[in-house]
Amino acid sequence: MKLAILGSGQIVMDFLTMAKDLPDTELVSMFGIEAERAKMEGLANTYGIGKICTDYEEVLKDPECDTIYVGLPNHLHYTFTKQALENGKHVICEKPFTIKSAELIELKELAESKKLILVEAITTRYLSNYLAIKEQIPQLGDLKIIECNYSQYSSRYDAFKKGEVLPAFSPKAGGGALMDINIYNIHFVVGILGKPDSVKYLANVERGIDTSGILLLDYPGCKVVCIGAKDSAAPIRSMIQGDKGSVVLNGPPNLCDSFVVNLNGQESQALDKKVHPHRMYEEFCEFARMIEAKDFAKAKEMLEQSQVVMEIAEEALAGAGIVLG
Image (cartoon, rainbow, N blue to C red; front, side, top):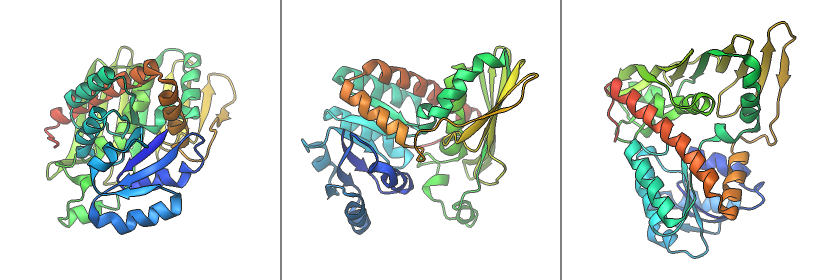
């Protein structure tokens, strides 16, 4: 995979710290605005990125690049992904995929018509511990309750309270608690149960954006609560409860660090199946494999789950009166 990286923000910085461990990935270029050139040049020197570009057309026309990683703010995902697909590039797009589900459907159809791989970078789905949790589900019997709480006080919330609106809390930029951290909870649940029968979002809304909220998902026989907060903090964990036992994941679902299986009448079992300390390693290994193998069936499967998640998020935000973009 010959990768062009769009952006130089926090998520890209995190990715770069482990990129050297990826066996089948070459960092061809990094794209950003002129004001970020000095920062990008420093990153290029540190992490072995081939070149710096401030003209997206240069990236799109580069024959050395076959894949584009969109690490830009949420509201830019659709436009930059569409241009990449139109120019014959595979795309890895950061979560949330798009702001509107219709945008994702359009991108999905475009990728299919061009025979290109399009995937959402959402670590949870690719982590060995998450896959191991899914393997434990049959032992839990009939699922009754799932509770996911990802509450993490944002360093940007203090600025927001003072009137400074950064992308993390900007409706225009597609920010807010649901689209930032609660999206991981939604993927965690949808990967297990699929599409819910109903969606309701109880949000704390300040200046048009959700700073925290409780998402309620109703499934036949199973009720789900997804809590996401950027204005307050609490122990982060997820619990899956069935009539024959439970699974407890300590820590956020985008890390899936380790988990405990509790079966009725048996001793608890602590498990950790991770293969690399960095949360993004397994997803990017799988992206490279999909692209190399032209595994469109797997990409389609991943896109279908992303579409369900986007539909849930869109319905939740609309119900709470929140308009993004």
